[in-house]
Amino acid sequence: MDLYYKDAVSRNKLQNTRFLQKALDSMMDWVRVIDMSGSTVYMNKAMKRYLQHNACDAEFHEALRQAHLRAAAGQSGGAPGLAGAGGQEFYQEIKAGSRVLEVISSPQAGAAGETEFIVEVFRDVTRLKNFQKTITEQNGKFESDLDMAKMLQRKLLPSASPNPGIEFSYLYEPCTMLGGDFVDIYNIGSDHLGVYIADVSGHGVSAAILTVFLRSTISKRMTSPAEALNTLYWEYNKNYFESEAYITVFYAIYDLKNGVLTYSNAGHNATPILYNRQNKDSQAYLKMPGLPISNWMDEVEYTERSVPVSAGDVLFLYTDGLSEIKNGNKDMFGQANVNLALQRCPDCNHMASLDYILKSAYSYADITDKSEQMDDITLSLVELLK
Image (cartoon, rainbow, N blue to C red; front, top):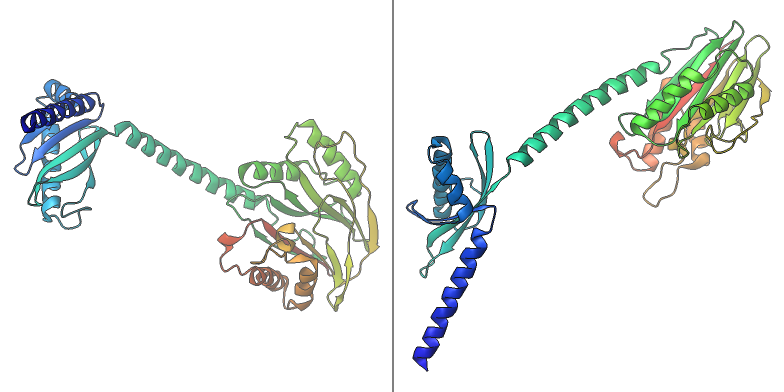
């Protein structure tokens, strides 16, 4: 029985060995077993085939030798900093000419617990590395292009008030490199001045393109904001933008000669506020219904309202990135806090006031870095000086 049992065990071991060898020979990866002196005990067919056809590739053979030295040093603890030193499996890469090979070395201990052999699996990752390099280069070019687009987009924003009778300031904080908010101000003839604030759906390149469309298309001749928005809607639908895309716009036109502010709204839900510098507690909310600039309907008809303005009157414009910023409980900053921040902001200058309002929202949402901002935020103050 004992002899029969031993024969059966031997046959099983032989079968297992043949099965293992067949499995290793079917692999595309190279496999070799080396002892601690560097002698090759075994290598699978894929590796044999390559070495037979590249016997004169001295650079490659030297790379294999160096891989073994690093593996052996790692197993004996002789190479400081090698991951897995002291009998642990570890990873390395070797280069031979234009080839890059990923090598995983696994120690095999004998009865005494000492490493006797190292099993190495080689995988050719040259194509993967080249692909990663290409992706890195393309990302670098893309980031460079985005930097250029960011610079160009900011150059489209107004640099100062175009009229000495109007003080104009804005604060523009996109949540990504390219924003979907936009603000603009310009003279319309000699007696009128147009100003608008807009919020484009989405972020990034597509949103930036829509802001360029808006700036280049909105009429700078019409003295009726409603008529200008009607024309803008019609022009938008001529260009076949995606149905998911849209633009919200609040558009106001100052009649400087007669002291009148006329305004219209295309779906901009951040309600502008009109107040006087001497009495910030008395605020007028310029609410007006209107559909966003989109292709949701074939025809729309925007309407407008007018209010008298005098010296010291200030128009506060903003996007919903301010009012909809959320704290840890998911509560929005909201209109009430916007009003409160506006009342409490310092009167020293417009930029200080805008900075105070933004910091109030950041404090509410516990934001310490602008990178934590989830939506574009644009704020603007327009003051009638005379």
